[in-house]
Length: 76
Image (cartoon, rainbow, N blue to C red; front, side):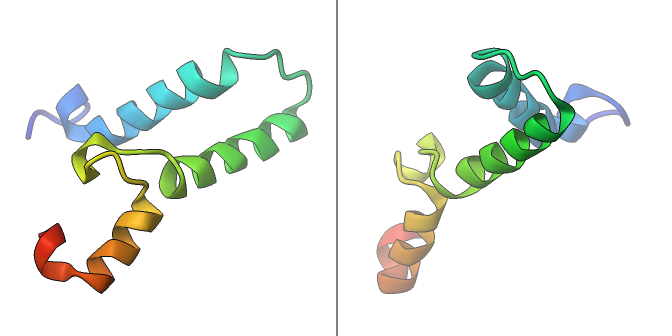
C-alpha cells in the first residue's frame, strides 16, 4: 500500500475524517464537547448506514447488505 504513516496506509480513515469535517463539523458551530461527541456518534451512524456510496452503485451500506442477501449473484 505505502509507507507507514502515509496517506495510502490509512486512506479509509483519512476519507472518513475528511467527510466528517466537510459534511458535519464545519457546517454549524458546536459549542460543547459533549454535544460534539453526540454529533460525531450520529455522523458515524449516518456514514456507515445511510450515506450513499458510489462503489455500491449509489446504495447505502444497509440497503446494499439487504440486497446482497436477497440476490447475491446480482450484487457480486
